[in-house]
Amino acid sequence: MRFELLVDSPMKKRETKKLTPERLQQFGFAYAPPLIISAAVNNKVFDTLEGGAKTVEQLKNKTGASARGLRAIMDALVGLELLKKDRQSRYSLTPESEAFLISEKPGTLAGFFGSILPVMTSRWLRLTDIVRDGRPVVAVNQETEGTEFFSQLVETIIPMSYPGAQKLADHLKVAKAKRDRFDFIEGDLLQANFGSGYDVATLGHILHSEGEQRSRQLLKKTFRALKSGGTIAIAEWLVNDDRTKPLPSLMFSVQMLVNTEKGDTFSFNEIKKWLEDAGFKKVRKLEAPGPSPLILATKP
Image (cartoon, rainbow, N blue to C red; front, side, top):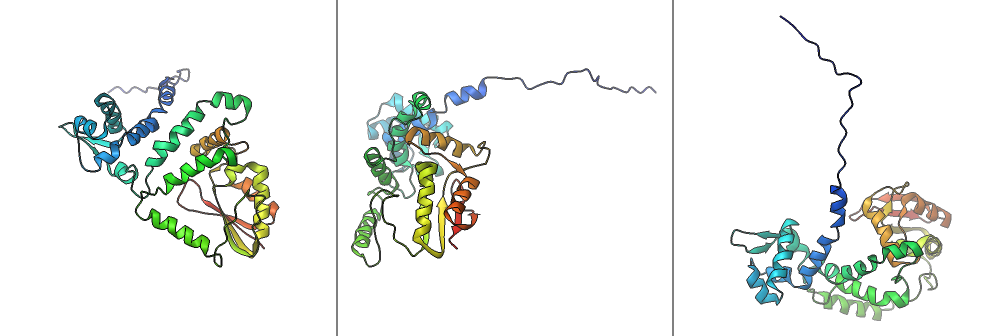
């Protein structure tokens, strides 16, 4: 009986993974899905399908859009798993699109894809110039430029077509009338008089639009407004200390470049230092739904 021992030569080269342009090609079409969703929202595709499965011709008759255009975007939406298509070529909603892309449902993203996204996309097309100049085409965190943008943004979050939205608007009017319970202070964050003696202060996605200097000033001002033992709660898009991840927060930093004068995304440790410099203690994280944990700190 004969045995053979096979040993790989140390000189044998290891096979390396072949480089291909596939990943870059995928990036090249990354703009397509959100714009396809936007076109579907604005042509009432999801709203029309809420009543049940329909063919292209039926959707054409309901929406007034072209058969060619509808077929193209709806087939793509099937590929994106936002629509289903049966053997009779009828299209229907998926649980995801039914929950989040019907315009009159609570929690809908239809307003974002239909109106806010096209505005933001048009500004991103100027990114090459913005990187060169270091300045946005339009700074949406400035009062004159941002009024229309944020008015539209609020309407997409709480459109008046929502059941109960009118009640909410009425409640806000009532709340403003009850000055014994609520105070509404208008004006620049750094100029308005916050008062003092508060138990809790919340900053919900504010720091990223303000940049470091104004954020530090705001935290100091908020510190003065809290009473001893009071807590600040900050919601933000956080990056790691090396600014290498997470990707959504890094991309949001570019969003701030495109839309603000000084805005950026920051790490927990950066914000922690700002809070401590302002006088806060016990800076910690609290896990919460959203892109990042909450940051809490206490006034001694």
